[in-house]
Amino acid sequence: MMSGMTTDLATFAHGIFDAQPFTRFLEAELTAVGPDSAEIRVANRPELHQQHGFVHGGVLSYLADNALTFAGGLALGGDALTAEYKINYVKPAVGETVIARARAVATTRRQAVCQCSVFVVRDGTEQLVAVAQGTIVATGTRQGEA
Image (cartoon, rainbow, N blue to C red):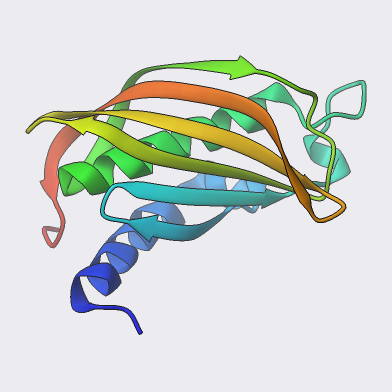
């Protein structure tokens, strides 16, 4: 059972996530949130591939960027934007599902530094395919405000 705070965080995060047209286009899912963390998944399908049959780096980048921003925004207690981030691709992404897991590692009143690992699930096993780090800034809209 979710506590009131966790339920409020999840409702707040899902409201923002569901309002993103590009997220809907990719058919991504926000599968977990915490006070300073987020997990986003996308099912692999041919439309997301590059010419070698791997999940396109742009898809991995989207997942990392969005997971970083959600983790940072949740840590900051409101809506947020990415100020900067860096991604390293470590292995071609081949598998059934791509998962990005991010968490805030340092937070001030106005910004959060976050880290993200991106995995592909292949034959039931998660394999690391990218890592990212970014700085997320508060927009000024807090949880519970319109």
